[in-house]
Amino acid sequence: MGLVNTAFKPDDLLKLRNGNLGIGHTRYSTTGISELQNCQPFVVDTLHGKIAVAHNGELINASALRKKVMRHGVGLSTCSDSELITQLLALTPPMEELDTPDWVLEKEIQRAGWSHRSPVAFSPLEQRQMVYTVRQRCGQQLAIEAPTDADVVSTVPESATPAALGYAQVSGLPYVEVLCKNRYVGRTFIQPNTRLRQLGVAKKFGALTDNFAGKRVVLVDDSIVRGNTIAPIIKLLKEAGATEVHIRVASPPIRYPCYMGINIPTKEELIANKPEFEDIAGYIGATSVRYLSVEGLVSAVRGVTESQEKDERISSNPKTSRLGHCTACLTGKYPVELEW
Ligand code: SF4
Image (cartoon, rainbow, N blue to C red; front, side, top):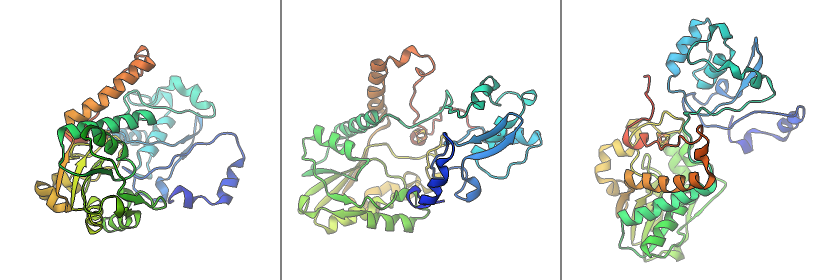
């Protein structure tokens, strides 16, 4: 276990030379905790042959499905949804009921590999251009909703950069870089505790002082989750000479957990649910903090996906035309019924 670039040694990769196909996937744990027994793929021998499953996401009806599999006498050795999927695939057709796999697909599974995405799956925007454009539009909308009397606009690199550029375009403020990022430090939000996350931030960024000393900075970030990684960045900028640091967030406050596979902390850990949120600017040490509205976010996403759909004529395919936008972690309105 570990980061891909440290977990796999050259010898491990040499062993993969036999065979012409493989499956695998790198993940951070959401439902299944980070321990060896939850590593994927799950491999089982079944009446249909050997099945290996690598999977990302969460099953919203996992507890009902766990009971179903156990009723068929199958024991589960992990708390991972992926093992559950593997065992559901292994059930024989006579036992098949609602919610078990469609065995019309059996032959496809028997071929060397099979990749499936549920028709009602939730996935972040996938195409790079689309992601970039949505983020940029979020920044433009944010500049309309939350204008700032400041000197420069900048980004918390790198995911917030398109939004910061969008903000700069609409506000007319110059875009400058205020932080340089150490690319060799991993993603800080995946660190298991606050102390490690803050240490990660301290190691991750350096201040590009000449670009902003003596100036009022608008710093655009793409989200504030717990509120403890942005605080050290603001401190860094102020210590390096920023006279004001205005935080503009290119998404609405995150208040609810995600059950669709994105790693969001518990409700209690989210800064938007804590008493400190009343004075979030004071809590993180910013001059001011403003968020994008839910309506602003939806219009930014919709504007891009609808034009994309039109361009690619996706709507001619009924399976892919059912595009929608989940806002559950922002609004608490889940697009599917939760079974717990
Ligand atoms: S709950 Fe939030 S993170 Fe999860 S799929 Fe919906 S919008 Fe995305």
